[in-house]
Length: 338
Image 1: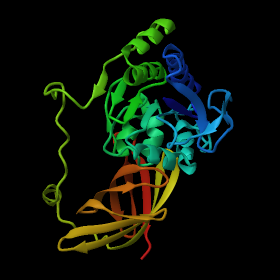
Image 2: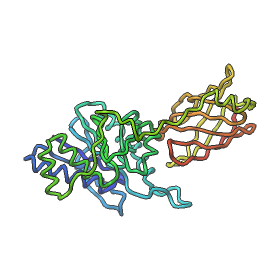
Image 3: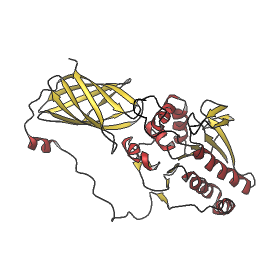
């Protein structure tokens, strides 16, 4: 079995080393049945991590055609940028930069091949989700990134390890140890995993979550009610005219997005199309009540994200917020172009 552990600029060293060493030890315990190598999407090179400039060497190129298992780490850096320093290497920015590398296309190939197992540690799941690769998949990441994970269309699961078939994800940085041991158990068997567990003097934590068995009916809250057109009709008559082309600016964790929105009023309702970054997507459930306009839309560039808008129209300008899941609201401003 051949394992590739991916390096990219700004990687979290513990996300890499913990599963690497566990899997390497498993290969020794299994008399060479497993080999592990550090790789990068670009090929052999020195790769600088995000913790104090630590550098590791990738000795090969990430290759889904050769690998049986691929492990993708998260990034290490500031969670948010200091005031006045929008160019700081925050974790969202480091992960977003992976979208400009061959990584998304290569992992996309791996996920399309049922013979290849893909695993992530911590923010590695976010990197793949931001690339639009995990929509509808059960996944976990660091607890600070769960809301962003949900906003990409993935299904966040509060667990240490989540097994979704050919995709296995792990939570915060130390979960790389648990991931490595679980991967050994799943691929080489429990006796190899147990031998490495004893060698490392570490017991794997938590129950591995799988979409199997009985569905729990307690402890789970009801989903929030969805706004309908009837709801808005009860709030007041729609008097504002929204028809036209609108130029919007939206603040996101990785910078400001420019989006064009085309709105039409038809049969007492609203229809719309969003354009930006070489893509066009229809607005979902646009509703106008008085001077308040709400809608949802999906964007895929520069990252995969589902946004919900709530803005107020004032003549030819609008202002309000855009939310991605339960993340803090981002400011939205716009003006009517035509």
